[in-house]
Length: 195
Image (cartoon, rainbow, N blue to C red; front, side, top):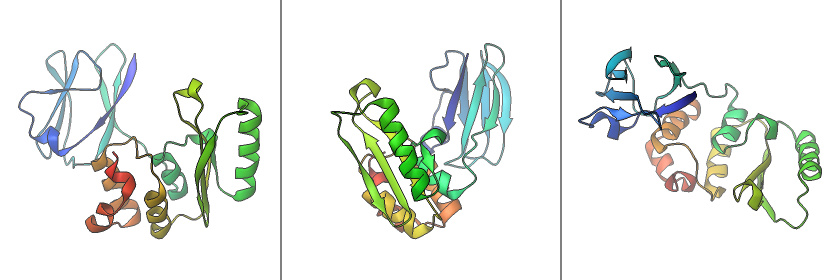
């Protein structure tokens, strides 16, 4: 079947009826500000306490009783930043030479002739995208990040104009935990305003 991502938000805490998990027809959940309860076909199948806004889970729906696990994010901060901007493992590099090689390989394999690519670059990072219509409009080509720190993350997210595909409370929670961002610093980030 499918795995569904479940992001805990402030809205979920105020829901009167159990909310549907992703596009699942039989799996629902409730959240009371501390406890997450998972239901399948009207019966409680899992419960987790000390859940906070911004936490994320994977609900494994295999046609039987679903199970719940915490969403795993990359351990390295370099990978985390690239992951937040939707660059998968095959598109990530950790130094300039590896990035240039990856970029050349991607261009050769995917035949970008006639397409426009663009991105952002700075000291210790580069992100490249392409407007291939056969890939849904935008294709994440290659990225590299080396020695991520809070200042770099701020700079990248200020330059990033596409927004992020993750829920705002989830991203906010990650930025606070991993990089020490404050609420005020998060409010200044352009990419988070586009979520």
